[in-house]
Length: 291
Image 1 (cartoon, helix red, strand yellow):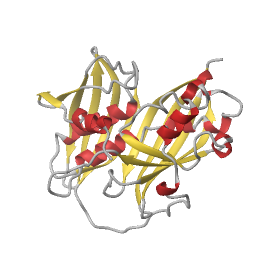
Image 2 (tube, one colour):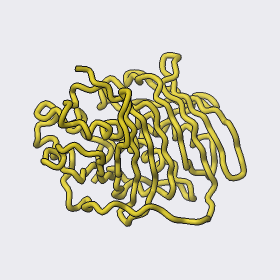
Image 3 (cartoon, one colour):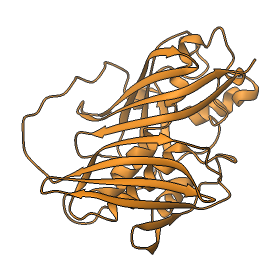
């Protein structure tokens, strides 16, 4: 199964180089006036990849500084902080209208062999046993019919999503602190020969921002309607532990540990369908009541 939006996202990752260390990116139009944070994460990661050779990103730490305007292209400026024998560091700033909207430190590593262990994957139903989220949201009538649904629930995405807690069910509506969902990129990904997999890891960065902030709302969804909240990503960290099979099913296991001061803390792990821990993410997001 291939979606036009997934194909377009691959095109958006093909940044235009306008000068050494300077790259220009277009935006997805479907997300409204604001740029989706995952898109900026993915494009900034690709900009950094353009300045390294035969390395793969293993970690990134980012701040979302201002809302991005989807009607304007984004300029990505890469600073070459360090080139080492094993690790290489870059800093990327995303700019619109002369102002920084995002900045990120990102680290790359050569391929190495070492000790291995990982957490086990949670015992959850497999994707073949679950309903597709978008189809379910359309049947339910979207956020206009149920304010607990995301306004984005009915919109086509580059990834297929299948939630363990099916949308609209009593279990989905309960107050809870975790939100496991299977995700799969909806287009084939062909990397260049070699160990580097820039496209897959950029797409994982995109996926790592999907529904992360809203997970911090779930313990309160029986007391506060989603429409009464202002939510936005504040910062974001991602660690990639193993090669990313982005066009196969990945369990995106999201959970929230704290909310206070209009901020919520969310953690997540990505597992392959055979139970390997692929990546981990942490984000603090704005979750502010407006009513």
